[in-house]
Structure formats: C-alpha cells, structure tokens
Image (cartoon, rainbow over all chains, first blue to last red; front, side, top):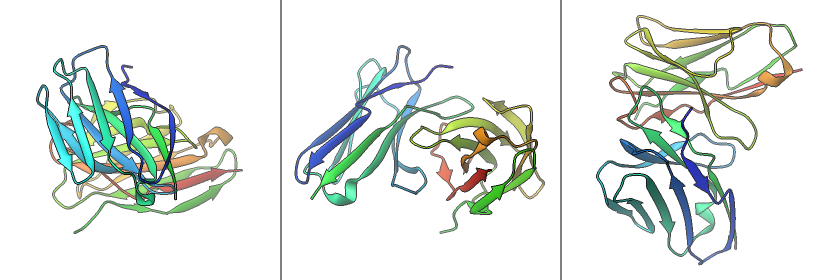
Length: 109
Length: 114
C-alpha cells in the first residue's frame, strides 16, 4: 500500500548540532503525524499537521507541512542526548495510520 | 492519565504453538489498532476495530485473528506460530473511526518464537 518515503534512514550527530528528517508522498496527504520511539519503547505522538504550509513548534522541534501537502519535515535545533530515538512520520486520514520507515537519530555527547 | 495497557509484556512460545495478546484501550477510546514491529523496522498495520467491528485489515496472516469485546478491550489470537512471528506487537487506541486523531500506543508485547 501507499507509504510515505522518509529520509535519511540514519543520522548521527554531535550534541548541539541540528537534525532534520524528511517525509515525501506522491499523493496529497489528509494529515501527517509525527511519532518518536525511544530505544526499547513504544511510538509516542508528537504532532499532527493538517493545513497546507502549516508550521508548528515544540521547544527545539519545528514541524512543517508542505504547501502541496505532499511533504513534511521535522527539524531539531541543538540536539541533546535525550533526543535519541527513531522519528517516524505517519500518513493519517484513512482507517489506519501508515508509518514511514523512520529516521534513527543517535547523538554523540 | 490512563494509558493503553497490553499484556503480557513478554511471551516466549515454540513453533506451532498459539498465543493470545490482550489490549485495554484508554477509557472512552472506541478504536483499537494492532501493529507488528520487527527489529529495526517500522510498525506494520495488522488490523483495527471501531465500536467492536473490524474497520480495516492490513498484512495480518490468516493464522491470526482478533476481536474487540463489549468493554472495548481487544485480543489478538495467533496460531501455528512461526519463527518469523517473533516481533514487538503494539496495540494503539484513539477516538472515532480512522487516523484523523493521534494514536496512543501501549508498551507492546515482545513475542519470541523458538
């Protein structure tokens, strides 16, 4: 089935560096949701984007939804060791939530 | 706040055995989803229920079945277990049909088939 493409698959940064993960779809998305999964944990909801061009911020995290509602990004400013985990975008709006492959973030202290 | 409760947390079974995983959604959540996650993989949708009726079906093997009960809890029944069924199984819940509202995930059941 349709799945959003997410890149990069892995990202290793030094603490204090910025981090960005991208999601792309070939079709217009009803909404896109972002989740974080810590190692050994479960996916935890971060944000939902619904409107074209929407930008939302949560402290050091900035989420964007493209004008065409086909792409989205998550940017973390000045990463901390607590940011480690896998970040998933997920395509919502249907009977099920379809996850991207995720970006695994590791942070070197 | 109450979260999604899954049991058991860990389960070890042998090939060809059966397993039952349980999920108790957040109170007043009427939709339950089951996902399977292999090591280093993204969660794969298996099946969902809304108001005790199956609402969607994904890549769930015919050996698996699930249902949602009158109290909204759900059970995933797995038979003729295979080595490849070893994975993390997550249950999630939300309000209303479909994924227009965020999903709340349980801690998962780690199934190991030997």
